[in-house]
Amino acid sequence: MMTSAAQLASVGDAAALRALIGAGALVSKWLTVDQHTVDRFADATGDHQWIHVDPERAQRESPFGGPVAHGFLTLSLIPGLLGKTITFQQRMGVNYGLNRVRFVSPVLVGSSLRARFAVESVTDVNNDGVEVVWNVTVERESSERPVCVAEFITRHYF
Image (cartoon, rainbow, N blue to C red; front, side, top):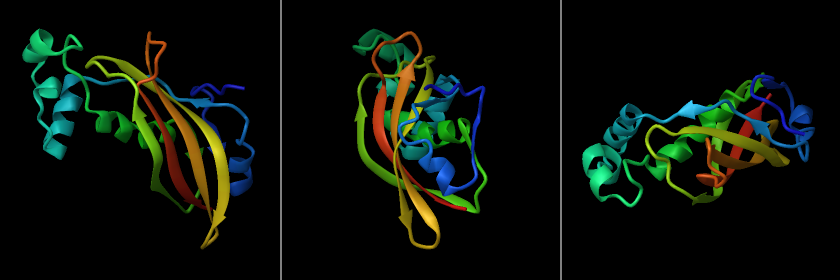
């Protein structure tokens, strides 16, 4: 089963999260990564490598044919894409980390991305919370190969 982002999933308790285990991927809407976003990320992180922030040089010299987004920019989009895919009715939710991340292919500036979120596991944690391991695949429109795959961990307190 694949749930469209237009049918925003709603989660109000741990049981609803557990019901997502094996239920298929929840899919976000497309998000375009533009040069302004890449430049702002470069400013925030101090990573001004020319393959990201110099479109003319990247077009001339990069093996990608133009500027590419930082891998960590792609990774940082995951929580926001999750938040636009699922509505949580909770006291609090936190990003807890990542078990595994791979940047499988580049994100050319101007690309549209979306993410597929599949719940791998839901485990009880202290203070009436649950820890969720999400298998995340970030896809680039018109590409068969994903740009990023990750095990993303969140904690939710209802």
